[in-house]
Length: 291
Image (cartoon, helix red, strand yellow):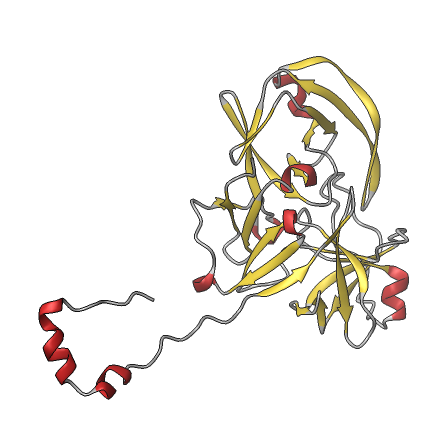
Protein backbone atom coordinates (compact mmCIF):
# COMPACT_ATOMS: atom_id res chain seq x y z
CA UNK A 1 0.00 0.00 0.00
CA UNK A 2 1.39 3.42 -0.94
CA UNK A 3 1.35 6.04 1.83
CA UNK A 4 1.43 9.74 0.81
CA UNK A 5 3.16 12.21 3.14
CA UNK A 6 2.14 15.86 3.28
CA UNK A 7 4.79 18.53 2.87
CA UNK A 8 6.39 19.94 6.01
CA UNK A 9 4.70 23.31 5.41
CA UNK A 10 1.34 21.71 6.17
CA UNK A 11 2.47 20.11 9.43
CA UNK A 12 0.70 22.65 11.66
CA UNK A 13 -2.60 22.12 9.87
CA UNK A 14 -2.27 18.38 10.18
CA UNK A 15 -1.50 18.57 13.88
CA UNK A 16 -4.53 20.78 14.48
CA UNK A 17 -6.89 18.20 12.93
CA UNK A 18 -8.45 15.52 15.14
CA UNK A 19 -6.34 12.39 15.21
CA UNK A 20 -9.43 10.19 14.72
CA UNK A 21 -9.98 11.69 11.28
CA UNK A 22 -6.86 9.96 9.97
CA UNK A 23 -8.11 6.60 11.22
CA UNK A 24 -11.58 6.54 9.68
CA UNK A 25 -10.59 5.24 6.23
CA UNK A 26 -11.36 1.52 5.82
CA UNK A 27 -8.34 -0.72 5.31
CA UNK A 28 -7.88 -2.24 1.85
CA UNK A 29 -9.12 -5.80 1.76
CA UNK A 30 -6.40 -8.40 1.87
CA UNK A 31 -6.29 -10.87 -1.01
CA UNK A 32 -7.00 -14.41 0.20
CA UNK A 33 -3.97 -16.65 0.46
CA UNK A 34 -3.59 -18.86 -2.64
CA UNK A 35 -4.13 -22.59 -2.28
CA UNK A 36 -1.10 -24.82 -2.77
CA UNK A 37 -0.92 -28.45 -3.88
CA UNK A 38 2.19 -30.49 -3.15
CA UNK A 39 3.64 -32.55 -6.00
CA UNK A 40 5.81 -35.64 -5.60
CA UNK A 41 8.43 -36.21 -8.30
CA UNK A 42 10.52 -39.16 -9.39
CA UNK A 43 12.81 -39.29 -12.42
CA UNK A 44 9.88 -39.94 -14.73
CA UNK A 45 6.69 -39.02 -12.91
CA UNK A 46 4.92 -36.02 -11.35
CA UNK A 47 2.49 -37.41 -8.78
CA UNK A 48 -0.22 -35.83 -6.64
CA UNK A 49 -2.49 -37.32 -4.01
CA UNK A 50 -6.05 -37.78 -5.29
CA UNK A 51 -8.95 -38.15 -2.85
CA UNK A 52 -12.44 -39.14 -4.03
CA UNK A 53 -15.27 -38.73 -1.53
CA UNK A 54 -14.43 -40.20 1.86
CA UNK A 55 -11.93 -42.72 0.50
CA UNK A 56 -8.21 -42.63 1.41
CA UNK A 57 -5.82 -40.58 -0.80
CA UNK A 58 -4.37 -42.36 -3.84
CA UNK A 59 -1.33 -41.51 -6.02
CA UNK A 60 -2.22 -40.00 -9.39
CA UNK A 61 -0.12 -38.57 -12.22
CA UNK A 62 -0.51 -34.83 -12.79
CA UNK A 63 -0.25 -34.79 -16.57
CA UNK A 64 -0.35 -31.49 -18.46
CA UNK A 65 -0.38 -33.48 -21.71
CA UNK A 66 -3.95 -34.76 -21.33
CA UNK A 67 -7.22 -32.84 -21.49
CA UNK A 68 -9.17 -35.53 -19.63
CA UNK A 69 -8.91 -37.77 -16.59
CA UNK A 70 -8.19 -41.49 -16.43
CA UNK A 71 -8.73 -43.86 -13.51
CA UNK A 72 -7.83 -47.50 -13.10
CA UNK A 73 -10.80 -49.73 -13.91
CA UNK A 74 -10.48 -51.85 -10.74
CA UNK A 75 -10.21 -48.73 -8.56
CA UNK A 76 -13.29 -47.26 -10.25
CA UNK A 77 -15.23 -50.40 -9.40
CA UNK A 78 -13.92 -50.41 -5.82
CA UNK A 79 -15.01 -46.79 -5.33
CA UNK A 80 -18.42 -47.50 -6.83
CA UNK A 81 -18.00 -45.15 -9.81
CA UNK A 82 -20.80 -45.61 -12.32
CA UNK A 83 -20.22 -47.29 -15.70
CA UNK A 84 -21.79 -44.87 -18.20
CA UNK A 85 -21.02 -46.90 -21.33
CA UNK A 86 -18.07 -47.52 -23.64
CA UNK A 87 -15.18 -45.05 -23.62
CA UNK A 88 -15.40 -42.15 -26.08
CA UNK A 89 -11.78 -41.07 -25.52
CA UNK A 90 -9.15 -41.14 -28.27
CA UNK A 91 -5.41 -41.64 -27.72
CA UNK A 92 -3.66 -38.48 -28.92
CA UNK A 93 -0.50 -40.39 -29.87
CA UNK A 94 -2.02 -43.20 -31.92
CA UNK A 95 -5.44 -41.83 -32.88
CA UNK A 96 -7.05 -45.06 -31.63
CA UNK A 97 -10.01 -45.34 -29.25
CA UNK A 98 -9.05 -45.79 -25.60
CA UNK A 99 -10.45 -49.10 -24.27
CA UNK A 100 -12.57 -48.91 -21.13
CA UNK A 101 -15.75 -47.21 -20.01
CA UNK A 102 -16.99 -43.71 -19.28
CA UNK A 103 -17.51 -42.66 -15.66
CA UNK A 104 -17.76 -39.49 -13.60
CA UNK A 105 -15.59 -38.32 -10.69
CA UNK A 106 -17.29 -36.15 -8.07
CA UNK A 107 -16.32 -34.73 -4.67
CA UNK A 108 -12.63 -35.12 -5.46
CA UNK A 109 -9.55 -33.18 -4.40
CA UNK A 110 -5.86 -32.99 -5.25
CA UNK A 111 -3.55 -32.51 -2.29
CA UNK A 112 -6.56 -31.41 -0.25
CA UNK A 113 -7.77 -28.83 -2.82
CA UNK A 114 -11.14 -29.48 -4.43
CA UNK A 115 -11.27 -30.04 -8.19
CA UNK A 116 -14.24 -29.79 -10.53
CA UNK A 117 -16.60 -32.73 -11.02
CA UNK A 118 -15.59 -34.21 -14.35
CA UNK A 119 -15.92 -37.06 -16.78
CA UNK A 120 -13.21 -39.71 -16.66
CA UNK A 121 -12.22 -42.81 -18.59
CA UNK A 122 -11.86 -46.03 -16.59
CA UNK A 123 -9.32 -48.39 -18.15
CA UNK A 124 -6.81 -51.09 -17.24
CA UNK A 125 -4.07 -48.82 -15.91
CA UNK A 126 -1.51 -51.47 -14.94
CA UNK A 127 0.75 -49.23 -12.84
CA UNK A 128 1.45 -50.39 -9.30
CA UNK A 129 2.35 -46.95 -7.92
CA UNK A 130 -0.32 -44.80 -9.55
CA UNK A 131 -4.02 -45.33 -10.08
CA UNK A 132 -5.15 -42.30 -12.08
CA UNK A 133 -4.10 -39.52 -14.46
CA UNK A 134 -5.42 -36.01 -13.82
CA UNK A 135 -5.20 -33.25 -16.44
CA UNK A 136 -4.44 -29.54 -15.99
CA UNK A 137 -8.00 -28.33 -16.65
CA UNK A 138 -9.31 -29.38 -13.24
CA UNK A 139 -9.44 -25.83 -11.82
CA UNK A 140 -11.78 -23.71 -13.99
CA UNK A 141 -11.90 -20.06 -12.98
CA UNK A 142 -8.45 -20.16 -11.38
CA UNK A 143 -4.95 -19.60 -12.72
CA UNK A 144 -2.66 -22.56 -12.06
CA UNK A 145 1.02 -21.84 -11.40
CA UNK A 146 3.19 -24.94 -11.88
CA UNK A 147 6.64 -24.78 -10.31
CA UNK A 148 8.27 -28.20 -10.67
CA UNK A 149 11.48 -26.78 -9.22
CA UNK A 150 9.61 -26.43 -5.91
CA UNK A 151 7.26 -29.40 -6.49
CA UNK A 152 4.03 -27.48 -6.18
CA UNK A 153 0.94 -26.11 -7.88
CA UNK A 154 -0.43 -22.77 -6.66
CA UNK A 155 -3.96 -21.59 -7.49
CA UNK A 156 -4.81 -17.90 -7.87
CA UNK A 157 -7.96 -15.94 -8.58
CA UNK A 158 -7.27 -14.18 -11.91
CA UNK A 159 -7.17 -10.73 -10.30
CA UNK A 160 -4.51 -11.88 -7.81
CA UNK A 161 -2.33 -13.88 -10.21
CA UNK A 162 1.39 -13.08 -10.61
CA UNK A 163 2.43 -10.60 -13.27
CA UNK A 164 3.53 -12.21 -16.51
CA UNK A 165 4.40 -11.32 -20.08
CA UNK A 166 2.55 -12.22 -23.25
CA UNK A 167 0.36 -15.32 -23.10
CA UNK A 168 0.76 -18.26 -25.50
CA UNK A 169 -2.52 -19.86 -26.65
CA UNK A 170 -3.11 -23.53 -25.94
CA UNK A 171 -2.47 -25.93 -28.82
CA UNK A 172 -5.52 -27.74 -30.18
CA UNK A 173 -9.20 -27.11 -30.70
CA UNK A 174 -11.85 -26.49 -28.04
CA UNK A 175 -11.79 -28.85 -25.10
CA UNK A 176 -8.92 -30.83 -26.64
CA UNK A 177 -6.56 -27.83 -26.37
CA UNK A 178 -3.56 -28.16 -24.04
CA UNK A 179 -0.87 -25.84 -22.58
CA UNK A 180 1.86 -25.06 -25.10
CA UNK A 181 5.02 -23.11 -25.86
CA UNK A 182 7.15 -22.79 -28.98
CA UNK A 183 10.20 -24.90 -29.75
CA UNK A 184 12.41 -22.28 -31.40
CA UNK A 185 15.03 -23.31 -33.93
CA UNK A 186 17.00 -21.12 -36.26
CA UNK A 187 14.46 -19.59 -38.63
CA UNK A 188 11.37 -21.45 -37.39
CA UNK A 189 9.11 -22.06 -34.39
CA UNK A 190 7.24 -25.30 -33.69
CA UNK A 191 4.21 -25.00 -31.35
CA UNK A 192 4.42 -27.86 -28.85
CA UNK A 193 2.31 -29.27 -26.02
CA UNK A 194 3.75 -29.11 -22.50
CA UNK A 195 3.66 -32.65 -21.18
CA UNK A 196 4.67 -33.64 -17.65
CA UNK A 197 3.76 -37.21 -18.61
CA UNK A 198 6.63 -37.38 -21.11
CA UNK A 199 10.18 -38.18 -19.94
CA UNK A 200 11.85 -36.94 -23.16
CA UNK A 201 13.16 -33.40 -23.56
CA UNK A 202 11.50 -33.12 -26.97
CA UNK A 203 9.21 -35.61 -28.72
CA UNK A 204 8.14 -34.84 -32.29
CA UNK A 205 6.05 -36.54 -34.98
CA UNK A 206 8.23 -38.62 -37.28
CA UNK A 207 6.96 -36.60 -40.24
CA UNK A 208 8.99 -33.59 -39.05
CA UNK A 209 12.31 -35.43 -39.05
CA UNK A 210 13.04 -34.85 -42.74
CA UNK A 211 12.87 -31.07 -42.32
CA UNK A 212 15.32 -30.88 -39.40
CA UNK A 213 19.15 -30.71 -39.50
CA UNK A 214 19.78 -34.06 -37.81
CA UNK A 215 23.24 -35.49 -37.27
CA UNK A 216 23.28 -39.06 -38.54
CA UNK A 217 20.45 -41.47 -39.14
CA UNK A 218 17.41 -42.01 -36.95
CA UNK A 219 17.77 -45.04 -34.70
CA UNK A 220 15.07 -46.99 -32.86
CA UNK A 221 15.86 -46.73 -29.13
CA UNK A 222 12.76 -48.36 -27.64
CA UNK A 223 9.01 -48.02 -27.63
CA UNK A 224 6.40 -45.66 -26.23
CA UNK A 225 3.27 -46.87 -24.44
CA UNK A 226 0.19 -44.67 -24.45
CA UNK A 227 -3.46 -45.23 -23.52
CA UNK A 228 -4.30 -47.17 -26.68
CA UNK A 229 -1.13 -48.67 -28.04
CA UNK A 230 2.63 -49.12 -28.33
CA UNK A 231 4.88 -47.67 -31.02
CA UNK A 232 8.59 -47.41 -31.82
CA UNK A 233 10.60 -44.44 -30.60
CA UNK A 234 13.35 -43.02 -32.84
CA UNK A 235 16.17 -40.71 -31.80
CA UNK A 236 18.82 -38.51 -33.40
CA UNK A 237 20.87 -35.51 -32.33
CA UNK A 238 19.92 -32.11 -33.69
CA UNK A 239 22.67 -30.18 -35.48
CA UNK A 240 21.66 -26.82 -33.97
CA UNK A 241 20.41 -25.37 -30.68
CA UNK A 242 16.81 -25.19 -29.48
CA UNK A 243 15.38 -22.40 -27.32
CA UNK A 244 12.25 -22.69 -25.18
CA UNK A 245 11.12 -19.59 -23.24
CA UNK A 246 14.68 -18.30 -23.06
CA UNK A 247 16.30 -21.61 -22.08
CA UNK A 248 18.87 -22.78 -24.64
CA UNK A 249 19.44 -26.50 -25.26
CA UNK A 250 22.68 -27.16 -27.12
CA UNK A 251 22.30 -29.66 -29.95
CA UNK A 252 19.85 -31.84 -28.00
CA UNK A 253 18.80 -35.36 -28.82
CA UNK A 254 15.30 -35.39 -30.31
CA UNK A 255 12.91 -38.31 -30.11
CA UNK A 256 10.26 -39.10 -32.70
CA UNK A 257 7.13 -41.27 -32.86
CA UNK A 258 4.77 -41.93 -35.74
CA UNK A 259 1.79 -39.95 -34.46
CA UNK A 260 0.84 -37.25 -32.00
CA UNK A 261 1.77 -33.58 -31.83
CA UNK A 262 5.06 -31.84 -30.99
CA UNK A 263 5.76 -32.25 -27.32
CA UNK A 264 7.98 -30.63 -24.65
CA UNK A 265 8.63 -33.06 -21.81
CA UNK A 266 9.25 -33.00 -18.09
CA UNK A 267 13.07 -32.43 -18.11
CA UNK A 268 12.52 -29.11 -19.90
CA UNK A 269 9.47 -28.13 -17.83
CA UNK A 270 11.47 -28.54 -14.62
CA UNK A 271 13.50 -25.52 -15.72
CA UNK A 272 10.46 -23.23 -16.10
CA UNK A 273 7.83 -21.67 -13.84
CA UNK A 274 4.56 -21.62 -15.75
CA UNK A 275 1.01 -20.36 -15.33
CA UNK A 276 -2.08 -21.85 -17.02
CA UNK A 277 -5.53 -20.37 -17.60
CA UNK A 278 -7.81 -23.39 -18.26
CA UNK A 279 -10.80 -21.22 -19.21
CA UNK A 280 -9.27 -18.88 -21.79
CA UNK A 281 -6.68 -21.59 -22.61
CA UNK A 282 -3.47 -19.58 -22.23
CA UNK A 283 0.05 -20.27 -20.95
CA UNK A 284 2.52 -17.81 -19.43
CA UNK A 285 6.16 -18.12 -18.42
CA UNK A 286 6.18 -16.15 -15.16
CA UNK A 287 9.80 -16.42 -14.09
CA UNK A 288 13.08 -16.24 -15.97
CA UNK A 289 14.95 -19.52 -16.26
CA UNK A 290 17.34 -20.42 -13.49
CA UNK A 291 21.00 -19.83 -14.24
